[in-house]
Length: 270
Image (cartoon, rainbow, N blue to C red; front, side):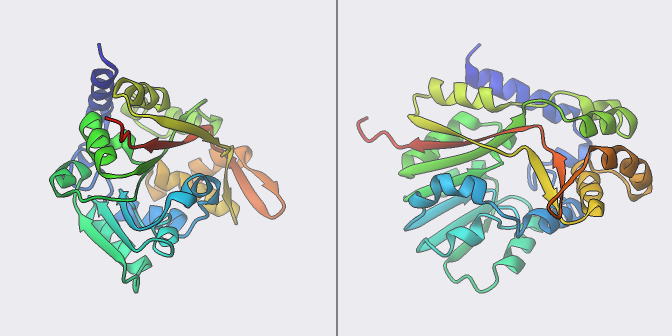
Protein backbone atom coordinates (compact mmCIF):
# COMPACT_ATOMS: atom_id res chain seq x y z
CA UNK A 1 0.00 0.00 0.00
CA UNK A 2 1.33 3.44 -0.90
CA UNK A 3 1.59 6.12 1.77
CA UNK A 4 -0.98 8.22 -0.09
CA UNK A 5 -3.44 5.33 -0.03
CA UNK A 6 -2.69 4.75 3.65
CA UNK A 7 -3.44 8.43 4.31
CA UNK A 8 -6.79 8.21 2.54
CA UNK A 9 -7.81 5.05 4.36
CA UNK A 10 -6.95 6.51 7.74
CA UNK A 11 -8.82 9.70 6.85
CA UNK A 12 -11.91 7.74 5.81
CA UNK A 13 -11.84 5.59 8.95
CA UNK A 14 -11.62 8.64 11.21
CA UNK A 15 -14.34 10.45 9.31
CA UNK A 16 -16.68 7.47 9.54
CA UNK A 17 -16.29 7.50 13.33
CA UNK A 18 -17.24 11.17 13.69
CA UNK A 19 -20.80 12.38 14.39
CA UNK A 20 -22.97 12.93 11.33
CA UNK A 21 -22.96 16.72 11.84
CA UNK A 22 -19.19 16.79 11.33
CA UNK A 23 -19.12 14.79 8.10
CA UNK A 24 -20.35 17.44 5.68
CA UNK A 25 -17.47 18.45 3.37
CA UNK A 26 -18.58 22.07 3.27
CA UNK A 27 -17.58 23.48 6.62
CA UNK A 28 -15.38 20.69 7.88
CA UNK A 29 -17.37 20.24 11.11
CA UNK A 30 -17.12 23.91 12.11
CA UNK A 31 -20.69 24.77 13.01
CA UNK A 32 -21.66 28.07 14.66
CA UNK A 33 -21.04 26.89 18.21
CA UNK A 34 -17.62 25.39 17.52
CA UNK A 35 -16.49 28.31 15.38
CA UNK A 36 -17.48 30.73 18.14
CA UNK A 37 -15.51 28.66 20.65
CA UNK A 38 -12.46 28.47 18.39
CA UNK A 39 -12.57 32.19 17.66
CA UNK A 40 -12.64 32.95 21.38
CA UNK A 41 -9.52 30.96 22.11
CA UNK A 42 -7.61 31.06 18.83
CA UNK A 43 -8.74 34.07 16.85
CA UNK A 44 -6.31 36.46 18.55
CA UNK A 45 -3.93 33.95 20.13
CA UNK A 46 -0.15 34.11 19.95
CA UNK A 47 1.23 32.09 17.04
CA UNK A 48 4.86 33.22 17.36
CA UNK A 49 6.10 29.75 18.36
CA UNK A 50 5.28 28.47 14.86
CA UNK A 51 5.06 31.66 12.78
CA UNK A 52 8.74 32.43 13.34
CA UNK A 53 9.76 29.47 11.20
CA UNK A 54 8.09 30.78 8.04
CA UNK A 55 7.76 34.54 8.59
CA UNK A 56 10.73 35.31 6.27
CA UNK A 57 8.86 33.71 3.34
CA UNK A 58 5.67 35.76 3.78
CA UNK A 59 5.72 38.25 0.91
CA UNK A 60 3.97 39.19 -2.31
CA UNK A 61 1.05 36.97 -3.25
CA UNK A 62 0.02 34.61 -0.44
CA UNK A 63 -2.42 31.70 -0.36
CA UNK A 64 -3.78 30.60 3.01
CA UNK A 65 -5.59 27.27 3.21
CA UNK A 66 -8.09 27.04 6.05
CA UNK A 67 -7.44 30.33 7.91
CA UNK A 68 -10.23 29.80 10.45
CA UNK A 69 -10.73 33.02 12.44
CA UNK A 70 -7.42 34.44 11.23
CA UNK A 71 -4.73 33.92 13.87
CA UNK A 72 -2.07 33.65 11.16
CA UNK A 73 -3.93 35.80 8.62
CA UNK A 74 -3.67 38.91 10.79
CA UNK A 75 0.11 38.46 10.88
CA UNK A 76 0.47 37.92 7.13
CA UNK A 77 -1.69 40.80 5.86
CA UNK A 78 0.87 43.18 7.33
CA UNK A 79 3.69 41.71 5.24
CA UNK A 80 2.09 40.50 2.02
CA UNK A 81 0.74 42.46 -0.94
CA UNK A 82 -2.31 40.19 -1.11
CA UNK A 83 -3.59 37.27 0.94
CA UNK A 84 -6.13 34.87 -0.56
CA UNK A 85 -7.76 32.97 2.31
CA UNK A 86 -9.66 29.83 1.28
CA UNK A 87 -12.00 28.70 4.07
CA UNK A 88 -14.81 26.10 3.76
CA UNK A 89 -16.85 26.99 6.86
CA UNK A 90 -19.34 29.84 6.43
CA UNK A 91 -19.19 30.42 10.18
CA UNK A 92 -15.41 30.72 10.12
CA UNK A 93 -15.67 33.05 7.12
CA UNK A 94 -17.93 35.29 9.19
CA UNK A 95 -15.45 35.32 12.09
CA UNK A 96 -12.57 36.02 9.70
CA UNK A 97 -14.37 38.99 8.15
CA UNK A 98 -15.16 40.39 11.60
CA UNK A 99 -11.62 39.93 12.92
CA UNK A 100 -9.86 41.41 9.90
CA UNK A 101 -12.32 44.11 8.97
CA UNK A 102 -10.39 46.83 7.16
CA UNK A 103 -7.66 44.59 5.71
CA UNK A 104 -7.85 45.81 2.11
CA UNK A 105 -5.33 43.25 0.83
CA UNK A 106 -7.32 40.26 2.13
CA UNK A 107 -9.49 38.23 -0.24
CA UNK A 108 -11.71 35.63 1.43
CA UNK A 109 -13.04 32.69 -0.58
CA UNK A 110 -15.61 30.33 0.89
CA UNK A 111 -14.54 26.97 -0.51
CA UNK A 112 -12.74 23.76 0.29
CA UNK A 113 -9.19 23.72 -1.01
CA UNK A 114 -10.03 20.70 -3.18
CA UNK A 115 -12.77 22.66 -4.97
CA UNK A 116 -10.49 25.68 -5.25
CA UNK A 117 -7.65 23.84 -7.04
CA UNK A 118 -8.83 24.78 -10.58
CA UNK A 119 -8.75 28.46 -9.54
CA UNK A 120 -5.22 28.50 -8.14
CA UNK A 121 -2.98 31.34 -9.27
CA UNK A 122 0.77 31.81 -8.79
CA UNK A 123 1.92 32.56 -5.25
CA UNK A 124 5.11 33.56 -3.50
CA UNK A 125 4.02 31.72 -0.37
CA UNK A 126 1.27 29.37 0.77
CA UNK A 127 0.27 28.34 4.29
CA UNK A 128 -1.73 25.35 5.48
CA UNK A 129 -1.86 25.60 9.28
CA UNK A 130 -3.51 22.82 11.26
CA UNK A 131 -5.71 21.76 8.34
CA UNK A 132 -3.92 19.10 6.26
CA UNK A 133 -5.24 16.23 8.39
CA UNK A 134 -8.70 17.23 7.19
CA UNK A 135 -7.79 16.86 3.50
CA UNK A 136 -8.57 13.51 1.93
CA UNK A 137 -7.10 14.18 -1.53
CA UNK A 138 -3.76 15.03 0.02
CA UNK A 139 -1.67 14.11 -3.03
CA UNK A 140 -3.65 16.35 -5.38
CA UNK A 141 -3.62 19.29 -2.99
CA UNK A 142 0.08 19.09 -2.17
CA UNK A 143 1.15 18.66 -5.78
CA UNK A 144 -1.08 21.43 -7.13
CA UNK A 145 -0.24 23.94 -4.41
CA UNK A 146 3.52 23.34 -4.55
CA UNK A 147 3.35 23.68 -8.34
CA UNK A 148 1.88 27.17 -7.91
CA UNK A 149 3.63 28.39 -4.74
CA UNK A 150 7.37 28.97 -4.39
CA UNK A 151 7.19 27.96 -0.72
CA UNK A 152 4.50 26.07 1.19
CA UNK A 153 4.53 26.04 4.99
CA UNK A 154 2.56 23.34 6.77
CA UNK A 155 1.81 23.55 10.48
CA UNK A 156 0.56 20.24 11.80
CA UNK A 157 0.14 18.53 15.11
CA UNK A 158 -0.64 15.06 16.36
CA UNK A 159 -0.70 13.56 19.82
CA UNK A 160 2.69 12.29 20.83
CA UNK A 161 1.03 10.98 23.97
CA UNK A 162 -2.64 11.36 24.83
CA UNK A 163 -2.77 13.70 27.87
CA UNK A 164 -4.41 12.39 31.03
CA UNK A 165 -7.25 14.92 30.95
CA UNK A 166 -8.26 13.91 27.42
CA UNK A 167 -8.06 10.21 28.23
CA UNK A 168 -10.33 10.74 31.24
CA UNK A 169 -12.78 12.88 29.27
CA UNK A 170 -13.05 10.19 26.62
CA UNK A 171 -13.58 7.46 29.18
CA UNK A 172 -16.06 9.32 31.37
CA UNK A 173 -17.88 11.93 29.29
CA UNK A 174 -17.75 10.95 25.63
CA UNK A 175 -19.43 8.12 23.72
CA UNK A 176 -17.17 5.22 22.67
CA UNK A 177 -16.95 6.44 19.05
CA UNK A 178 -15.14 9.58 20.24
CA UNK A 179 -12.12 7.46 21.04
CA UNK A 180 -12.03 5.91 17.60
CA UNK A 181 -9.42 6.25 14.84
CA UNK A 182 -7.36 9.46 15.03
CA UNK A 183 -6.84 9.77 11.28
CA UNK A 184 -3.54 10.61 9.55
CA UNK A 185 -0.71 11.77 11.79
CA UNK A 186 2.56 13.64 11.40
CA UNK A 187 4.48 10.53 10.38
CA UNK A 188 1.91 9.85 7.66
CA UNK A 189 2.33 13.38 6.29
CA UNK A 190 6.12 13.15 6.18
CA UNK A 191 5.86 9.79 4.40
CA UNK A 192 3.46 11.27 1.83
CA UNK A 193 5.77 14.23 1.16
CA UNK A 194 8.67 11.87 0.60
CA UNK A 195 6.61 9.59 -1.64
CA UNK A 196 5.51 12.57 -3.75
CA UNK A 197 9.13 13.71 -4.09
CA UNK A 198 8.50 17.12 -2.53
CA UNK A 199 11.70 18.62 -1.00
CA UNK A 200 11.04 19.76 2.56
CA UNK A 201 12.58 20.79 5.87
CA UNK A 202 11.05 19.88 9.22
CA UNK A 203 11.11 22.00 12.37
CA UNK A 204 9.69 20.99 15.73
CA UNK A 205 7.79 23.64 17.68
CA UNK A 206 7.81 23.14 21.45
CA UNK A 207 4.17 23.25 22.58
CA UNK A 208 3.98 21.31 25.86
CA UNK A 209 1.07 23.32 27.31
CA UNK A 210 -2.11 25.17 26.47
CA UNK A 211 -1.94 28.44 28.43
CA UNK A 212 -4.97 30.27 29.86
CA UNK A 213 -5.52 33.40 31.90
CA UNK A 214 -8.01 31.67 34.21
CA UNK A 215 -8.68 28.13 35.36
CA UNK A 216 -12.25 28.53 34.13
CA UNK A 217 -10.94 29.19 30.63
CA UNK A 218 -9.07 25.88 30.64
CA UNK A 219 -12.31 24.07 31.48
CA UNK A 220 -14.28 25.97 28.82
CA UNK A 221 -11.57 25.31 26.23
CA UNK A 222 -11.74 21.55 26.84
CA UNK A 223 -15.54 21.72 26.75
CA UNK A 224 -15.42 23.23 23.25
CA UNK A 225 -12.55 21.08 22.07
CA UNK A 226 -14.39 17.88 23.00
CA UNK A 227 -17.83 19.23 21.95
CA UNK A 228 -19.28 18.63 25.41
CA UNK A 229 -22.61 19.96 26.61
CA UNK A 230 -22.67 22.76 29.22
CA UNK A 231 -24.52 20.34 31.54
CA UNK A 232 -21.29 18.31 31.75
CA UNK A 233 -19.19 21.25 32.90
CA UNK A 234 -19.08 20.33 36.59
CA UNK A 235 -17.86 16.81 35.83
CA UNK A 236 -15.40 18.24 33.33
CA UNK A 237 -14.00 20.67 35.89
CA UNK A 238 -13.36 17.77 38.27
CA UNK A 239 -11.28 16.09 35.55
CA UNK A 240 -9.42 19.13 34.24
CA UNK A 241 -8.60 21.01 37.45
CA UNK A 242 -6.09 18.48 38.86
CA UNK A 243 -4.26 18.48 35.50
CA UNK A 244 -3.71 22.27 35.45
CA UNK A 245 -0.55 23.90 36.78
CA UNK A 246 -0.46 27.59 37.72
CA UNK A 247 2.77 29.33 36.80
CA UNK A 248 3.51 33.07 36.75
CA UNK A 249 -0.14 34.01 36.40
CA UNK A 250 -0.93 31.48 33.67
CA UNK A 251 -2.86 28.25 33.98
CA UNK A 252 -1.14 25.51 32.00
CA UNK A 253 -2.83 22.38 30.67
CA UNK A 254 -0.55 19.68 29.20
CA UNK A 255 -1.04 19.45 25.44
CA UNK A 256 0.57 16.12 24.60
CA UNK A 257 1.04 17.45 21.09
CA UNK A 258 3.89 16.99 18.68
CA UNK A 259 3.79 20.16 16.57
CA UNK A 260 5.74 20.39 13.33
CA UNK A 261 6.39 23.21 10.90
CA UNK A 262 7.25 21.81 7.48
CA UNK A 263 8.70 24.04 4.77
CA UNK A 264 8.14 22.65 1.28
CA UNK A 265 9.96 24.31 -1.59
CA UNK A 266 8.99 24.09 -5.23
CA UNK A 267 11.44 21.98 -7.24
CA UNK A 268 12.12 24.20 -10.26
CA UNK A 269 14.62 21.69 -11.66
CA UNK A 270 11.82 19.43 -12.94
